Image 1 (spheres, rainbow, N blue to C red):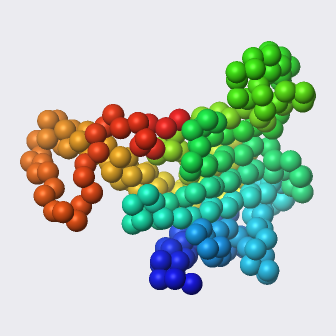
Image 2 (cartoon, helix red, strand yellow):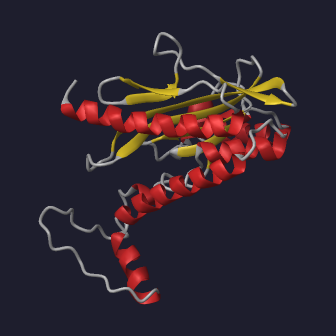
Image 3 (spheres, one colour):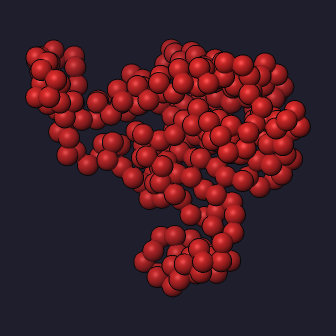
Length: 253
């Protein structure tokens, strides 16, 4: 492996350790640990089986009875500047025990704009939504209509946007959902762990958003909070990008 690959795997391993701490702190010490597996330009972070490749589901109990399973995987890469760990693709799927089809799935695809990169898909049925999907098929210019044409409409094909590339939910949000709505079994002190990791995740995403729109961040600090903001002069720093720059992921769907 090259030095960059080693460094990427090291960063991904730190991320894997964070996810292990989170899931074990919420679901219990028996939750399988996350590992980092190098695949060239990306590193897979997930609970892996003995072969180091197969993703293992995380068991979730309700009143000590196994009822749900979590499938969690992240493919990590370097960000555009090659400085920070980024997610190329992430999948968090909630399954009923031993079911092949998930109940719902949160997904993120780094290069997607349409469908939105960060989205939620729900595997359920509602006649009214199925009817609307059928109507959409008639519009040849609609990407989703072209994709579904000739197939029975399924609600699971709808990509519900969830905050865009910078403010998408994390695994912490999914665990909170499961505890709040399904009363899953959790460890003592679990909420403190979730709150701490949520804060870390959102501050991390805030930093990424600031790098996308530094002029806006500087204006808020200067005009609303009374900070003195000095523009960078070092040649080693990237040039500030205007807030209206449309290729920034901050503005992607």
